[in-house]
Amino acid sequence: MLRQAIAGCVALAAALTQPAFASGASPSPLELKSSAALVLDEETGQVLYGKNTESVLPIASITKLMTAMVVLDANLDLNEQIQVSVEDIDTLKGTQSRLRVGTTLTRGEMLRLALMASENRAASALGRHYPGGLDAFVSAMNLKSRLLGLQGTRYADPTGLSSNNVSTAEDLGRLVRAAHRYELIREFSTANAFAVNIGGRPAAFRNTNRLLASRDWDIGLSKTGFINEAGRCLVMYARLSGRAVVIVLLDSWGKYSRIGDAARIRKWLEVADGSEAVRQRAPAARASRKGSTHKVTARARKSSGTSAAVSVRRSRAG
Image 1: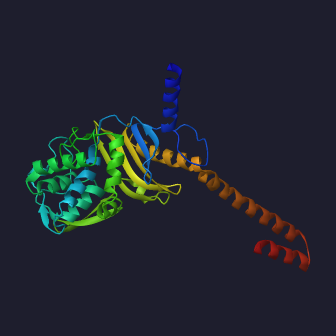
Image 2 (image 1 turned 45 degrees about the vertical axis):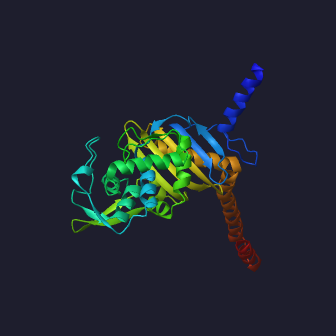
Image 3 (image 1 turned 90 degrees about the vertical axis):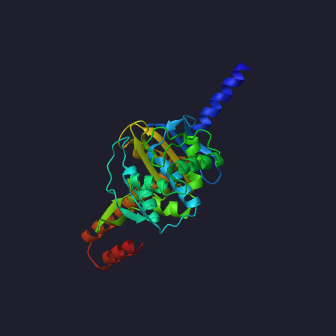
């Protein structure tokens, strides 16, 4: 019985660290720098990879996905002007913001900046301008969390600056799937840049996830996060190897390691279903064809007469 139990545990561990592809490929083990990680097949909900998925960790600005859902669920007027106040200044971490006290933007603009540029004052202003104020907003965040079945998730503020905003990789997989159903969250979180008028001057903001600027990625939702207690965090809904997947990376220890982990996951999935091998063969095939053409051309140059020229033209046409 003991041997059977041990064998069962080994099999479960293997299932959580290997992608479930029908191709039967056997990719190398996936080694990530993030303390907790999850790769989820969005359509089936199947876990393709898991690492410390039930560990409760601070989630920093990943919080803002819940902030956005609560704002949109309330059906508040996105064209209503709301103002940044002294209450929105970060006294906890001392982070800076380009949204000075007195800046007035529409609720929709604040929401876009919170999701795209992870603007803390914008997220705070959204919470303060909720019916009942900030306390009511945080209560709504936690209620929404319970309704989604996020057992290990708690919220203390709408920005994520508090380390009391905690969750698990497993919970965040569910959160991302829920957030992806909101058209505006998909749009705002994946925009590369956005400009607003601040004090009579245009101010351009950029997305905090640099992968959105890469042609190699097809990303349908994105959110980054960072405070010292949480490390570097990243969640995405992306299409990789022909399937929609949810990626959750928490407490990544290096400045660029969450990006590196995302790239490792993409390659790992490509190897699993064979698309990586196809992609590597394509340049080699092109180089081979190019080399064959050059050889024919060289032989033609050494030859004389019309037949050699005709041979060259035919080889190029083929």
